Amino acid sequence: MNQENKNKELSRFFFNNIAFLFYALCLSFVFLLLIDTFNPGFVSDYFSLNLFKYICLGVGLVWVFKNVNKIVK
Amino acid sequence: MKYQSKFLSFFDKLVKIAICLLPLILLSFVIEKNYAFSGHKDYVYDFEKDSPFISHLEPWNRLSPISEEDSVYSQSMKDDSVYFNVKKPLTSFEKITVKVTYQNPSAEMLDVGLRISQKDDYLKLPLESKLIDSLQWSKLESADGIMYQKNKEFSSFEDFYQNFPPDKKIISHNFNIKKHVSEEKTNHQNITPLRPSIKIENFDIVVTNYKTPTTSSSWQVAKNTFNYGHAYVDENDMMRFMLAAPGLRQEGAEIKIEQIELQFERAPYTAGTAIDKLKKFFKL
Image (cartoon, rainbow over all chains, first blue to last red; front, side):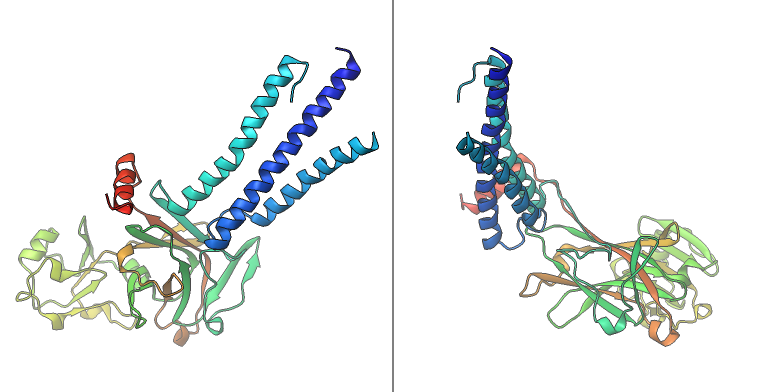
């Protein structure tokens, strides 16, 4: 495998896993938000859902960047 | 998703498993925090930021505003009693220990109270008693408590219970004499609870379960333990506590509070207790 292919595969690996992480985080966020809505404080008393929201957004931005990259190419 | 490199294919699976485990770890963390399987749960309010479990002290007009000195936040109480609410944990416990870090330059007594009924009745336990701390009488310590005698007459608590002196004036501070001495033997007129106005020279014996606060830098740390079952929980799932310093307003003194910590304790859950609870839940 030449260097260019290696780099492409590495970036594919990176973006694929970021996308997977994004789906996992979004699903967990919705799930935890639902638990916290029905039992106020169950999650938010111990773990900041607000912080979680920004982590989701951050990872989401990388995911968007990946797709924008694809479109541009 | 296939990769040409075997290492990347393997690593991809590993990363995906780790990502799937993340929410599960987070969920177990939240469940453990709520149900405290370890049998121990701590709530802390340090005046620097709000706690989701312990309210601010109230009423505001009996307190000074929260102040900061060398990155240490504190609030002073300037009246005889102030209150705070505590969110009831999801599971029940056996004991609640209230630990207070404070500075008390002059008030005679500081007690902590737990609301035990809808009628605003409080069960009070001592945090500090300057009178007992400065007592120079003969001191006798045992598992039952501590006994101070003006003139040493009893060599043990057993001796005291068996030869109970009805003619002696006794201060009973956080100590249940009735538990050990029969009703006929005790002369209730001679047994008095500790009050700030009390003249200690008029008494002969002090029996107490009080423990002198420890000192950490310039702060005192005092704690006492309530039975969890005694707590009254209101319709908003809140328990109410009181910090009481009788005579504080009259003296024009203040008590600076730096931290309030609540420690909930019970036996940890084991596989056996978990199965029992599940059986009970499903009525098996």
